[in-house]
Image (cartoon, rainbow, N blue to C red):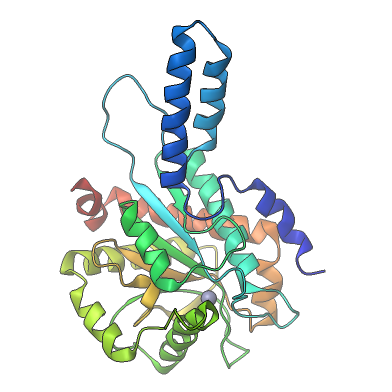
Amino acid sequence: MVETPFKDAHAAASGPVGPVGPVGAVRRRLVLGASAGLVARGALPAVAATHRHAGHSAAPAIVGRAAAPLPLVMLDPGHGGKDPGAIGVSGTYEKHIAEAAATELARQLRASGRYRVAMTRSDDVFIPLEGRVEIAQGQRAALFVSMHADALHDRSVRGASVYTLSSGASDAQTAALARTENDADRFGGPHVHATSPEVQAILASLVTEETRRGSAHMASAVVASFGPRIGLLTHPSRHAAFVVLKSSEIPSVLVEMGFMSNHLDEAALRQAGHRAMVAGAMHDAIDRYFASGPGLAAYAG
Ligand code: ZN
């Protein structure tokens, strides 16, 4: 059965359904408040409860001095819930691949101790595209990484690729991909409408030059990190009017880890070992991004 390999990854995902940060933060305050009251009466078990919650949260540990907060990386597993995303040649759902890979990347980033990490979804739920952008903006993410494994008409095409926002597409294949991806909102019912091409063009023009530079910098970091270990499309860095990348302030990229329409890519992405390698390359790209160039300016303010 297709879903079985992803149950473990799902169980490993931390945090409640939906955006982790604000809910976790509110809970932590409540727990801290409760524990302060209990500690005043000398009830020690409350301290253990606080620790349990702190370990559960995406936020960094509270230390004695006021250090600058670690940059928040927002991972966005594509699709979810009633939107399966692309369905692979042997029946794998893109939404499961995206969630499993993002969960592994979140684990790696947290283990590094260099980032705070949140996910737009850590469960199999539907979130409209604009809702994903709003989650990232609401939590003041320093970087937004949308993770996908879509399908193309040409089943022979395989390899990873990375996409940034622009009003026009870099090529016909990318234009088709953006159309499919932007169409995810059709699952949201009549109250959620995919943005029209005209509105997308306006939104793209609102993205600041600094954000655009940051996104391009991240895209080249992904290409550099994937190159040695994971197969890339020819001209792997592409652009089109992806709604999910339209945050005006947060550098944003969409990574296609491979294509569900190619049986070799699908088979590879079903393997936890391959997903860990992809996540490792993305971790490396995120390190590169924050170590140099626009990444620094993007979260210094
Ligand atoms: Zn997708």
